[in-house]
Length: 514
Image (cartoon, rainbow, N blue to C red; front, top):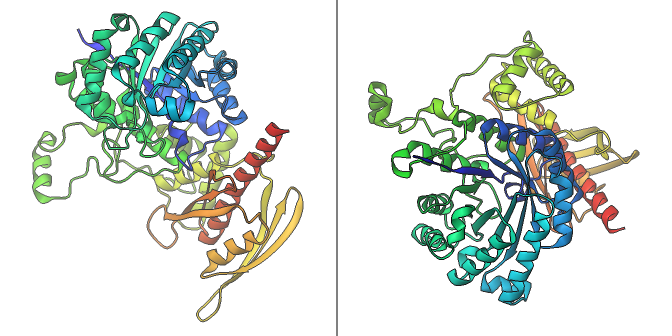
C-alpha cells in the first residue's frame, strides 16, 4: 500500500526571505488561498515575531484560509512561541514550529551553548508550544552538519517532550543525496520512537541538491517534505514544490507514494507566486518554465507529432499548462476578465475587479491588442497598490526633456506626507534623469540597486512592466513595481512604490523601538 507524503509549503515564510520578495498582507492571503486550492497539507505562513506585518499576515491567513494546517515559525524562546500562538490560534488546524541550531559550528560560534544546554532549550520550547496546541514541529537547525549521534539525542529528547513532527533540515545545502538519505535511515535505526511521529525534511539548494536530497529522504522513510513554489528562498533557494510533487507522481513506480496535491493547479500557482514576488522564472525551469513542454528541434517535433510520449514524460495538462489565450478587448466585460484571472489563481475583490476592467478598457481604447499577459500585468499592478494610508509619497506630475544632442533633464513634483516637494535632475537618459530628480527630494541613504524593464507583449505599444529593488541604510532590500503604457511613467511609479514600502517599514521600525 502506498504511503502518503505530506507537502509542507514554506513559500510565505522561507520563500519570502528571498531578497526583494517581500509581500503585502493581501498578497500573502491571495497566495495562501491558492496554496489551499493546490492541496498543500501545511502552510507555514510566516515568522510572527519577526515584525508586526508578519504577525498580521499569519493571523489573517489563520482566520481566512481553510483546509491546510496553518503553521508559524518560532525560535526556541518563550517570547517567540507566545507570539506565534497569538497568530496561529485562529486556525482550525494550528501548528507551532520551533527550532534551535544543533551543529557544532552553530553551537560554538552563534549560540555559545553546550550540547546539554541546547537540548534543554529544545525540550523547554517544545513543552511550551505543546501547552498551546497538540500539533508541534521541532527542527534541529543545520542538522545536515550535526553529528549523527547528537542529532539522534536531540530528536529523542524532543519526541519525549511532545513534538509530533520532527524536521531534519539541510539548512545550508551542504549534504549530498546519498549522504542525506543515509541520515534519515540512521535516524529511524537509532531512534525507534521516530516511527510514531512525522519525519520531515527541509533542504536548501546551495549545491543544487535540494530536490534530490528531499527525494532521497522520502526513499528512506521521510513522510513530510518542506518546499517552496518555484524553489524560491534564501540564497540559492529551497526544494521546489512542483519538482518534488511531479517526481513523486511521474515516478510512482520508483517511490510508491502519494500526495494530496492537485497537480493541475501547479502552473497557475507558479505564475501567481512569480508575479507577486517579482521573481521571474527562467524559460527552462523544470515543470513550470515557458520551455518545459516546448519542442524546437525537427527530430523532436517529428517524434512528438507521432506520439507525445516520445519526448514528454508528463502531460502538460497534468500541471495545468494549456497554452491557450483568451482575446480581451474594450468590449469585454468584468466577468470575462475576472474568469481569466481566476483561471490564473487570482482572487480579486469587487473593487479590484472593477479597477482591472477599467484599466483594460482604457488600454484597448488606445487601439492596443490586449493579450492574456497584459491582463495579468494589470492585475499584478492593481494587487500591488498600497492602501491610501500607505501611500505616503504620491506622484503629482513630471516633465522630461530629451533629444539628439541634448542632456536629458527632468523635474518631478511629489506629495510627501501631504507636503509638496519639487526636484530636478539630469541623467544619461530620460528615466535616469527622472530618477535623479526624485533622489534630490528623497533620503539619499536609500539606494536604487536594480532597475528592470520588461515589455509585456511585442510591439511599440507594449505595456511596460518595471520592477526595481531599493536598499535602505540598514541594508534591507525592498521591491517596487508598476505597469503602464508609458515606459517613463512606469519607471517613476515603480520607484515611488518601492520608496513607500521603505518609508512604511521605517515608520514601523520606529514605532516598535519607541
